Length: 402
Image (cartoon, rainbow, N blue to C red; front, side, top):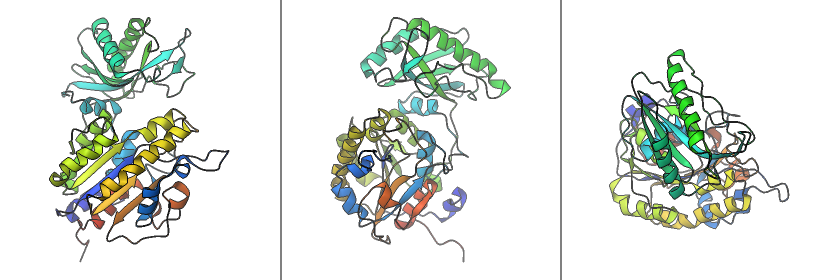
């Protein structure tokens, strides 16, 4: 990957426009009955036509064989080494709902979940409860849970997701998660990764114990899981590194929070893909880089619903003509990671990618899918190279060296 400092010296500001359309969890695995992945099953004539005019490949979010979370895989697409710039999920969720994070704060992402009589997690998302129910439960925890000497904020996000913010002196974010990441296991105790975080780990476990008691009579959300403990990070900004005036269009708060961390303006984006496309049109003249996020490809994969994921990819396909009508200088269609319905979760598999511009060398790919993109000119490459490819094809990079 190109060094951020090197790119900062080469990047130039121009009027050209870049659109990065990220279908969360885009990549999949073949259905044993048909031999086709979700993307190969979906009818995607617009994406296929676009692939025929583009340069294609497969991206590796972090490293071969490594299954990434959403934050590191998005950071890679934005041009940041996700190993060097590691960010906890909690702070991103907090920023995504415009919570006023302060220097003394540690934030964690929460999932309301379902446990059985033995304390075993039977549903990590409590059936994806409604946001209205989430708000009710966050109010309950705010009333019932207290920790001496610490300010607690329990903030609803969306569906089963919420944020808990611990505010106090000497708090640290170097903690393990209580989320076991799969059903059939008990919530874990939070542990300190460094000795200085031991007190914060004890506070988090106290919160979890009190929350379990408070949620006992709430069904299906009778427990909660915590992950991604973090304080506010300090990352180089896209305006400095890439000379871009960048905007984020995303419905889900975590992705809006991540965009803010790297210096994007998080625009009002509606509640669905149609609202996101309208936001893109409405703001198109005001920015030169747009990150547009589509969630349903990921959530349907996590639910193990192969057909729903294929349908979500068809919905994405239907939006392509509206984006092309804006005449972007560069349009990229990417996924942050793969979420095969067969695995019901994120995976390590490389992700289909295309880059369209008037300066691109077209390859022979005529269908946007895993097997076809594997034969594209870009081959399998690091997702951290996406931004330099975009800048180059938008004529936003000077020559390196004499």
